[in-house]
Length: 168
Image (cartoon, rainbow, N blue to C red; front, side, top):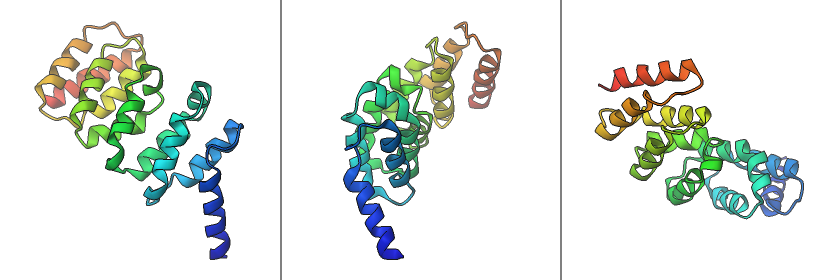
């Protein structure tokens, strides 16, 4: 049975990105992108960067879960590349939060910038990552400014105010 597992794992790894079906690619990413399997992260990232924008959008959740499950800080530049694209950033909440937990300064700049977005999901994702930058004056200032932006969701405004009160 263990031999079948390794063959299956090798098959999944070797065929990642070779299928036109987004469902198959998403399933391969999901099955490979598990905690402790850092050796496959480079292949997953290459697959992500070499796929169409449509496939990126459809499978973002699989990629986001894989990245956050593997938590490999050797690929921070790739994670930043993903979340620096405003069209993709809202689809990578776990990656954004992971970068926040690592208190990455480059990510912080992006997250602060996203706090003024009209995309509430992007603001929420940024908020969940910025909470790890405790007592950071730039983050506090960004949260204060974000309260001046008219967000469509009143709960978001409340969450921003709550985090701001915890940071002061």
